[in-house]
Image (cartoon, rainbow, N blue to C red; front, side):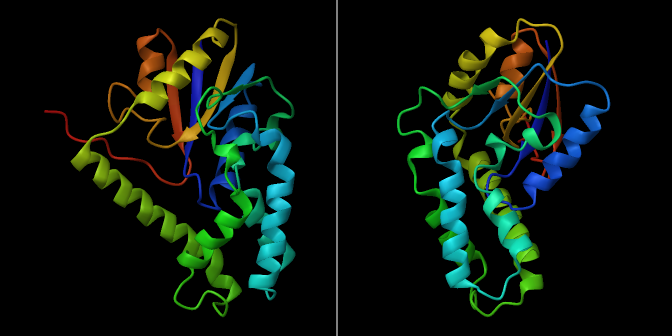
Length: 222
């Protein structure tokens, strides 16, 4: 099966819009038969409440920001789980994290994200101009990605999640058409032989990737 990856950054509030633009280029050809996302199915029941919780906390934190900015920040929470609907509508979903102990949806996402933003907007998070918010958050998460990448080069990468995802996804890839996979950028790359991207290629699937806001640089192979 042809598998098309959208590789993003989980916390970067510009990733959702970048993914929408990427999907629009794909929609000119056809609609995917399924989408796989780096979330567990439990997020469906709590997503709206988590985003509303974020909005309430943000309103107390920075009442000067316009609703459209707050909405973009709120919709960046678990953006991978529903962004495809903005272009393709409802699709069959493979929840890659189903079966994982302590799945991501068990975390307090709205409150945690508000605290992440406060840290990224330091040293004056309450007074920083509205025009600074998105650029500063975007830059912060790009820098975080570079730091994470360097650490993975130095310490190695645990591929156990990629292997679990491949087991969740592979049984659904026996259909005609193409599948969309929305995961973190490194998992969508050829970083090593055990990224989800390369595991699916090894399984006989044709894969290509679009990187939404940041493209990883795989370590030099010895």
